[in-house]
Structures are given as structure tokens and as C-alpha cells.
Image (cartoon, rainbow, N blue to C red; front, side, top):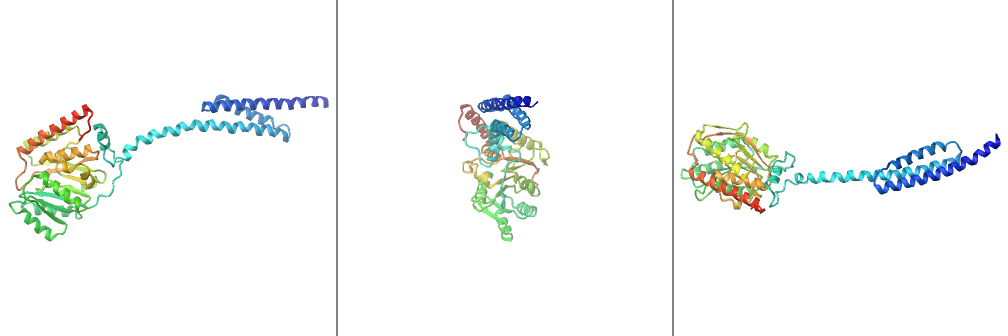
Length: 378
């Protein structure tokens, strides 16, 4: 038995040496192959399994047998490296996702020139993911021409509905004394201001003058409102709330929840038809392009090129909305109830409708031609 044991021991020792050398060679080859391939290979896994077997076999002898076990673990450590390398593509794969979100993160800035209508529409419909700063103080601009019967009532309603808002009456030297009534209101209330203009120059010019005055005096929100009561001051808080997540809010008659009161069918046809005509020619998503009840952030007005606006009446409203969309600003509509004036005369005329029709057509055709020729939008 002693001879047999002595005869077997050398064989065991040699077997361990041979097998450990063989396994280390195979493991090194497997790890090398795995590193070159950049991914864990089946051979590397077999080597790890073999390392486990040698560890189990090495438990029979004493302390000397622990060495193959320790060495057998080295390929295991190296085999982890291909696994780490294999994970690198996952980290890199996240980069396109981050880049895809950049337009949303930078959506507060206007689009650069040459951006297509699709990009503008995507930026305009931001899903509420943009971040907006505080609104600042609100200035309600009320243009007047022969509104002496209405101005006191509308000012009182605005002050009651939004007590913190200031009011600017932009009077075009009304023959009926509207400017004088406005001065009396301003003398009684320091939140009422009056801008006296030289003469009747049109609704658009009056609003532009009011916008510039408001921006110069540090107002953060500028609101368009008629003096005749058709724009209800009681609905202004709804517009201002919506403006917390937008650049321009339009009080719309033609979205669900919006309506009109006391309008003849002919007037409704003109308004609906004008909005549809403008929406189709200019390729914009706004349903009430001619609406005059609006709330702008100061930055929106500064970014749409007010100095280049020359349109009036209905066309003025279309012009501003289209410019805001082209500049990449976020425009939304909220429903309002429009009530036909009870006192005074409407400023609507055939000239206003005609101007809107030909200007909108020229803008729409010009935009399509620029797109076909690859030109930048003006």
C-alpha cells in the first residue's frame, strides 16, 4: 500500500501541474480572444468554469495545493474586463436620447432662421415641458376712439377682476372726449395710465404704441383688450394663468368652450371664414387667428420684430400670431365668450377685411415659394 501511494503521489502532482498549466494557457487564450472581440465569449465562460473545478480539486492536498486555486482565479478577474467593455455601447447608446431632447430643453430660445414649418410646429407644441420665468406685472392695453360711453365701465371691471394689473388707455384723440374721461380715471387711480396719440391711426398702430410704452416701463405681460366690453375682463385671470406655461395666449371663440353672443350670422361668417382662410394659407394650428383678446409675454413681443409690423385691424392680429409661430414661440388658445358691443359703433369695415385677405394671401404664397426654393423665411 505504501508503494502504491508513493507511486500515485508523483502522478497526482504531475497531473496538477500539467492541468494547471494547460488550464492557465487555455484561460489566457480565452481572455485574449474575449478582449479582442470586445464581448464575453463562450470560451471565457468555460475557462471560468474550469477555474472553479481546479479550485475544487485543489482542496485535497495541503497548503501547496492552494496556489493553483489562487492562480485559477486570475483569469476570472481578467474575464470581467470584456464584460465591462461590452457595457460601453449601452452608455454610448444613451447619447442619441439626450441629443433628441435638446430642442425641448432649448425651446425657450426662438428658432433660427431657415427652420422649417414642421420644426416650428414641434417647438410650438411643447407639451408643457418648457420652463418659464415669472410673469411680472401685467399691463392691459385698451385702445380707444370714441369710447367715452364704455371706457369707465371697462376700466372698473379690469381693476376688479385683476386688482394687481395696470391699465393703459391708448386714445387716438377721440372727438367725443374719451381721452378726458381717461385722464379723470387716471387721476383717481395711479394704476391707470393714459397715452394720448395725435389722431386716428388704426388699431394696430395703437397696440404697437402701447406695447412699446409697456416694455419701456418694465411690464412683464402685455394684454390686448377692446374697450367696448366684447372682451370680458372677468376672463382675464384665465388667460394669465395659461400664460404661465406659454409665450402667447389667445382668447379663442372657435375652440371647444368658446362662443359668441349677439352676433349676426354675417359677422360670424366673416370671422370664422377669416380664421379658416388664414390657418390654411399660413399653415398654422391656431383656430381663431383674428381674435383680439390676447396676453403676451414681454419677450415674445421683443422677439417677433414689432418694428416691421405695418398691418391693421383683423390683419394685425393674424400678423402677430403668425410671427410668433415663425419665431418658435409657444402659442395656445383658451376658450372665451365674445359679446357684441351694446353701446357705440363697431370699427369693422370692408377695407379691414380686404386688407386682411390680400396680405394673408401674399404671406402664404411667399412662404410656400421660399420653401420650394430653399430660402430662409424673412
